[in-house]
Length: 333
Image (cartoon, rainbow, N blue to C red; front, side):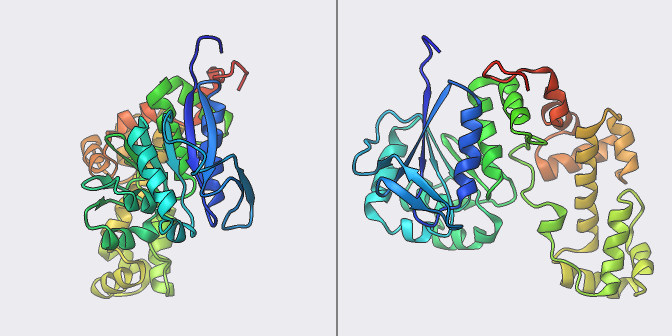
């Protein structure tokens, strides 16, 4: 558009990168219209092979792309990051570009490249949960928190794996252009929900192990069948056919969390869905999903998600709310 200067977003890739770490955020910025121009840089210009074999053409190599003039630097992740962070030329270029850019972001294990460039000292960051311990062990100067799906610490934004990169990119768009544009982009890309950064990167299916035995499986099934039921240890033990003490021990050993913590997480996720999919009052949702009062639900949301239920509903409703918007490009959505 005439008179509008596009923000320059540069993605850093390398052999063995995760393709969705690139293509997901790239599409988010592209869908925001003329406000962004996206480029791809790699150790060398030309084809770069992803971990799944997909070839992507890097228009620039670090030797021919100066570090100046970049608005947002996005470093993707993937198995190849371990080799990439040993590439001194690439690491030096990332350090120089990040220093000059308005902000820098990483998706998934791309955070290891930022750490190698010395950009994360003293900062709070996140990454894919599977690499949390490695990042903390190798970089004790970094504060690692793998509960959120993305974290902002000053000009540095980091995210969890794969689809969390799209949540991060939507947050960057919202930071630049406002909530309505970010909602319109989410609608255009058929993203069900723009998740807040403080939301856990673990769904119930992912943050716990699967039950290994029928008694524990029976208890888990009962929890998911009716999250709002009482589900005290005596009731769950009756479902499992075990004594309360025996179930407590086996449940924690098999799933990695005690029954009470598991029940709370299931209830929180059920309440999140209810808040974003309908207009039921918060008090009613709290009662239906076992929180008893709206105040208990509010305290639990603040502790687990860093946001109040009412604010969660207002900010992160399903894309049905965005149906009345048009896309940033002026097209119907």
